[in-house]
Length: 220
Image (spheres, rainbow, N blue to C red):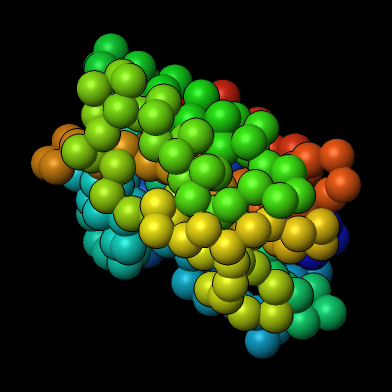
């Protein structure tokens, strides 16, 4: 799974320089899919990445369409790689040019929430505590109603499997468990931000399998 995360990172880094205003979500998703294969993702692990820009980025499960990237857009890329049957699942937001101040501020809140969730991971802690740690950051910033999904899901041979990181799951974390931490804020009609990492539980705490930058990067 660590190798899968590295493959995913290499693929996105190869695709980022090709992003430009006017490129459609569908075109970027196709390019990223090609780069995933080139970077070593197994063919059976191929899937269409979630590429959503502008108002579409406020939809957590958007499907890439024909909307072109435009200056001032938030861009969400949710992509995966598979190696030896195991899956990595990451999400990073980007700015197409300069963002309005609130959208940039929302990114900072989500980045902090992601960090809080990861730092809360340790053996014996209930899954609900990880959700709570991330959610409290977003609620404190005044965006609690805009975090509209669970904080994460288990990951391995399947994209979604136990443990589920949500408010009503008090199952205890154990060393070796791997799951996503992916808080988000979604502003309907304007844009959304999600930062997703794959986290493994160790005896000492939680460790992210991804080193890909979480700071907001400009593209296009």
